[in-house]
Image (cartoon, rainbow, N blue to C red; front, side, top):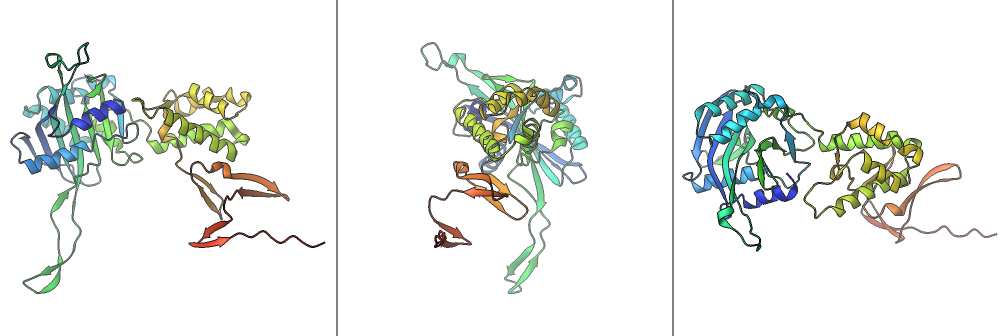
Length: 383
């Protein structure tokens, strides 16, 4: 799914839409020992409005607009299509519309046996339908040609006791310590998934979307053990692998100018594709062109494909995950933070045999520890 497709489902995931219906909701509580303590299937139509609003807001967070970072698409491996495979279990839940007991029990058993989770949690899964509007040749909506996209949207919400503290007791007329033993289910899911994906305005049961509240710390057991997919790199790992490739290719030529130029070029690529639906990615060929643009020698460019293949294989890198929002120059004693657009005001040089970092100042007044200080030129020495 691209940003536009995720955005379409997210935008319509409200009661006011008129095109989206959340029919049934499966909720289950799994304790810290991974026992399914309770489970319930409710009709969302008859559910109290305030409860439905909370669950809907919770699940809507799974449809993160941060595609390629917080929300990532995964393909099901071949073995997951066999009996007992995750794709088959999810497909059965979808086909039975959360109305059949057996597929629900089978999936919850699978989930509780496979998942690794730091606390007790609530699992919630909704069966929803979305009316896909279509237009005729006159660019007018044709209701007779409308199709329906049926999907499951699920979230994993941690459950913890609230903070203990002191409360005012009217009976004692004093502040007394409150012991909180009730488990509070978070409204913000730590993880979630969408099945099937909505691609080219049609359902694709061969793929699913995985959501992580912390993109750099995804729950691998959910991706690999529960959903049965092969984990891709998280944004932090992508950046680390990219830096390895850059370091290996450039070698001793990797200096301040090259590093900042590469980052600026990546930012330009992201900006050029900002209005496009597909998330811009970088493969070995595109990386080679980018490095050529910033002045890497032809001799070093010849090894780009080999180094790339050895480091990340055929996997493309997401451009937005490689960009540094600010440039940081650091030594053991000094750290300098440089905002985007100001990298050209900093340069390195060797003066009198000493390696120096030079900063161009448009204004001779600078702020030091919150105080404005003026930098004076030393007086010219008299001859």
